[in-house]
Amino acid sequence: MSNLTERFLNYVKIDTQSNPNSQTSPSSSNQKDLCLLLSRELKEMGISTTYSEQGYVYAFIPSNVDEAIVSIGFCAHVDTSPDSLGRNVKPRVIYNYDGKKIKLSDKWSMSPEEFPVLERVKGQDIIVTDGNTLLGADDKAGIAEIMEYLDYIVNHPNFKHGDVYVCFTPDEEIGRGTDNIDLKLFKPDFAYTLDGSEVGGIEYETFNAASAKVKISGKGIHPGSAKGKMVNASLVGLEFHSLLPVNLNPAFTDGYDGFNHLTNIVGEVESSELSYIIRNHDKALFQRQKDDFVDAQKYINKKYGYEAVSVEITDQYYNMAEKLKNHFEIIELAREACKNLNIDTYTLPVRGGTDGSRLTFMGILTPNLGTGGYNFHGRYEFASITQMNQAVKLLLEITSLSLSFVSSLLR
Ligand SMILES: [Zn+2]
Image 1 (cartoon, rainbow, N blue to C red):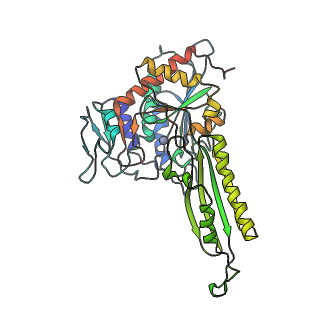
Image 2 (tube, rainbow, N blue to C red):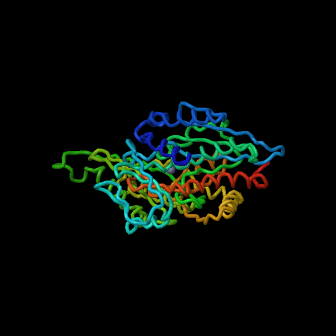
């Protein structure tokens, strides 16, 4: 078994699910178990590393060339999704996958008819679950690849590179991956997250994202004498929702479509509350969606003649394409590296955000690369060992190409 496979299998066996209901950093203390293992392994490799109690692991390898060249960074997240069981992961390796239906357990199986992506890994060595948990390739494939990349660099002193920064983040799955990142310890000129699916994926368009809290105060009174007096906050909440565009229900959207997603609704007569997330790749359409919330608020308050509705909108992250469009050479660098390794590239709009969305707006342009994992966040998740090995080569190739890389954003 290769080092990379062994690493990956070790990492996925550690339960690192994040917890959206926790206010601590990291949101679950078990994420620290993986952080501590990673910092121990990095130290054993002789790499300068820092572990922060908030769940971050930083690593740094200084440049081994004389001339000043760009520094490069790589990121991956230690947590796994809270959406599916993450404890007791029992990964299984299938060598030279034959392209047929895979029996995960007595109860669960995975067929190419249901999951056409299986076609993409026919003939490759893959790792699957036992049907009871997620696998955690998201994002431990990324972590294992970065670790293997660092291991290669320290064991090949003739491999030329600039300054290399690495950061493993906690709580990416619950949107807090960069909340406590220390940019004194992670300060490359630009970076890549390894948090995508098939290797060859180079993603640089994420959503613009906001959350909205809609609070409604009603006027409660005995229903027997309610005529002309009662304002039922729950009904006003339904009315508010009905004023939003119907076609922006996420169930009707894909590709570049934005959406308003009602995530929670609670209510009684006196008060009700609706929680939404607002998403769009396009900044102007994103703004229009936010305006719709305010327009609905105004309409209802006018209709009832008092401040029945309050709307609080909080921006969460923005589409990194807005910043990257002026520095496209970072995308081209990754494309060039793929080309040199005969890896087909593809680019899809990310229907979500990545740690890179926030990092990009913090000043470190950070597109996302594929890792060789598929079907994230559930029992059908799997990873291709063949592609994970390719990803390690890709990181090395990007690093090599960066030696002669001239970027408009630098110095
Ligand atoms: Zn991820």
